[in-house]
Image 1 (cartoon, rainbow, N blue to C red):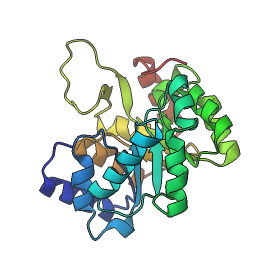
Image 2: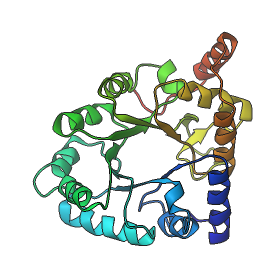
Image 3: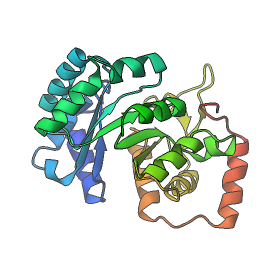
Image 4: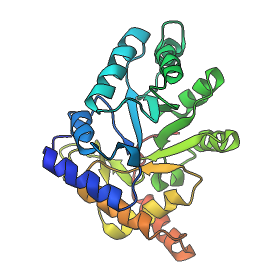
Length: 258
């Protein structure tokens, strides 16, 4: 979002050349749908395209789905997700009568979407959702800082593995919350990300050792490229690297509490 169309075209082409095949977007990401739709023209078949809706009612979700399909110049999404579904009361609306789930089920029957997922930051709400409906994927934060300071998301991760549900890791290089008044070198991130290439390498490899399906890195092109390089040369962490990562996590503050 916020980049020129030419830049978006070059970034998408660069990602595809380097083996990226999962592309995630949402209506709330500025003009990203429009830019991505144009950048994927003639290349749609090369990617697993995922989109989201933050609407909770059937009527509003249906309008948003149609608009996203139009903006992205596609006739179907490989994955369509409830966006940021963290509040129990919103879960009840989305999964209840007249809720957004009805739109997704109807769209799946028509071939407009192929899989149904959910994104958010509240592990307990995912577990509650799974009691209501067999989601195909769950997207939530997984990183070494959260794991080091507690068991955030561990119960959810274990349940998803047990049920063979797709696990999409976000915020793999999140370091800590921004401090008040701190210069934000990476303004697209609402948290301070790691930006040292070596630390990004360790953090990315840590996540990739877990049973995740894929990871979604930061939207900043420079950080995206550093995560991409780390993923391409993946190897399991050594014991020395684990100690190094643990010491780094000691000095950082997790974004979420357990």
